[in-house]
Length: 365
Image 1 (cartoon, helix red, strand yellow):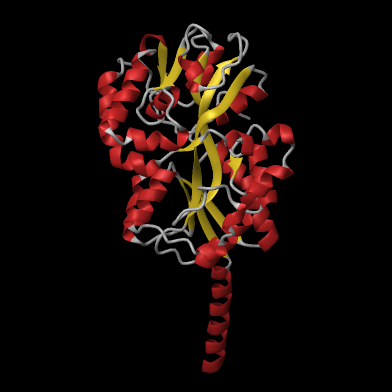
Image 2: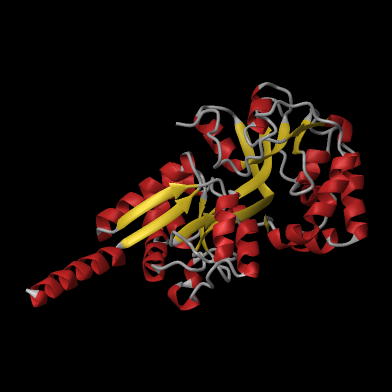
């Protein structure tokens, strides 16, 4: 009887071990972002592997998750992170270092693989204009500043981040030199002098949905904007155009929290989600740029050419340096806040929405 009990207990333990070995918990950003990941990655992964994949959502800045990361007692194996969290988590030791031997770096867009992260997709912040209102074809941030050639109000994000980079690009700084110049007092002064030139003609925005809403309402004719939102409005029939020259792009990444217990399963999922055929599905759902370069060739050219990581769209673009903003952000944002005009906005409009994955676009499905 005793041996039978031991045998039963051993058999039960084996079942539990096998079950645990097939488990995977992932936390990602909510709403449309999560829905697209379900279609492109979660559902196909469950079907292909039989894995017990559970996913939850968080907003990327939730203090509960930050505290859990600091404790090293993760309750999940994988998480979607923005670059600022990725950089900080890697520096502070909250995240596992990526085993680079498990990643075929040659397949990925430059900059999408880091010490602690594997890129999920790229997003962009670019010049956008209403072709129904603008005579001619703007092609650079210099044109954005040219009020005589392209008259009309402009929209800019009311923050130092992105806006100071744009000002230096408009002033002729080469994309590769933007952060080197912005890292000096003279460079910062230069960016603010450039902004002064169009300050009376700027309508400032804070929420990701506002640029296209302002364009549609004829409040502005050009704006900086997150391209994901513009792509949504283009599908709805607007004549908004994106100028990729001088665009700023960055990546969201998969990261493994320190203390994760199913690291091998996490790597299996990362490999699955990095396949070009699966990244194609994601870019079909939302206009994010695939990080696997091979995925672009699987998409229809008319779709691929509208994504941030299309080869032509990366020319003249810069990768946002989140480490730079981690070092200088507080100082530069304080100076910008002192310089910028007061802004009257509703509580909803003042919500920081990053690049569109934390609230649905106005015309989202």
